[in-house]
Image (cartoon, rainbow, N blue to C red; front, side, top):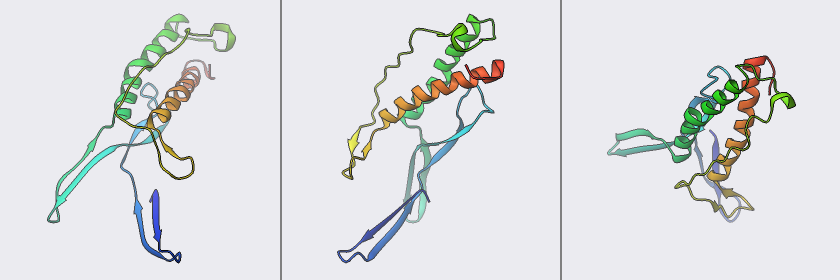
Length: 154
């Protein structure tokens, strides 16, 4: 299991231990490069039972997932096409032909809240995590684009 919770009494003796495995889906890290890598993405899920019978057990795509699907299917293909068009399908990389564009600005708002967990400085911050995925994922996208088009990263 991904998470184990143990609750103890005042003397430190455990009186409850439970585990939790979040639901996830497996998807290509980059839609453009299906064979590159696959990643586990946590997802929303609704499971309801009544009288021992399952009434519903289905995935609910979260806002961050929907955004990432859009980014993968719309933004990164446009970036790929732009770079390849600029360099007749064979970018050289390095200072030879970079930068490929001035800036990439992403503006979004989502329903996910950011809040402190009350344990040390831990926070629940899906927007911050998505910001990192956009930045580092796009940097990695350029590396993979280069490796697939010229044998080494851009």
